[in-house]
Length: 166
Image (tube, rainbow, N blue to C red; front, top):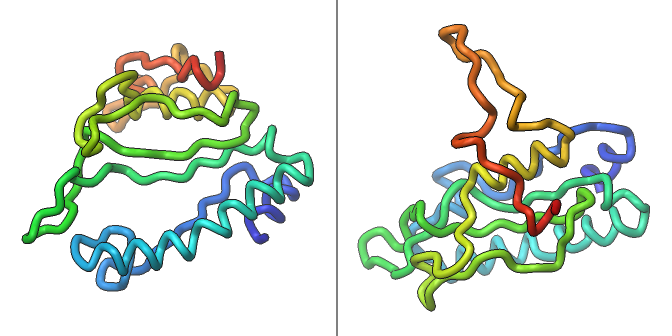
């Protein structure tokens, strides 16, 4: 409800965090996975659905971009030592609203979710999509680095995901 109220009042960026400190029961658990993820999925599933429903009901979803994800995936096989460790090759995210063409799955993995098998999506493409929805052209927009040199916002001149914005 607070996130929706902030959006209604014109706040341009709202971040919601789900979890606890690194010593607390959080999403970045490497052990006791069933208990941990059952807890966190149960605590976030309904509120995220309610936020999306509320934004749509109030006519705000088309102008509000909602991103639900993390910075990496998890190993496809559970290790007895590390549980499911960090895995950079496959990750998942949910993008909703923002005037995008939603209601689709982009890309696929093997049966273990370890390797992309079709339409791999790079993080740079996701960022290019987010910037596009904010009205920022990543082909021309730069920021100045600490050495005074201009740097593009996304790597390799990545383009927005055509499936979402095209």
